[in-house]
Length: 70
Image (cartoon, rainbow, N blue to C red; front, side):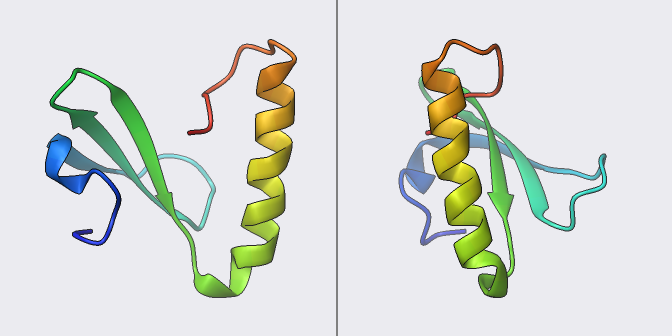
């Protein structure tokens, strides 16, 4: 995880094993108190995940209550 942007601000990292996704997921807290969900997917799913992220940003911009993509 050391190659992840702002990794040095992570104060807590824990695996999330719930759900149906094949992505690896981690609960993260940062030194400034933010609570994040980090999802790690296989590189073969890059194009699909990129499109998913774009759609999430569009939906969030409409004000739909959801986890915010950052």
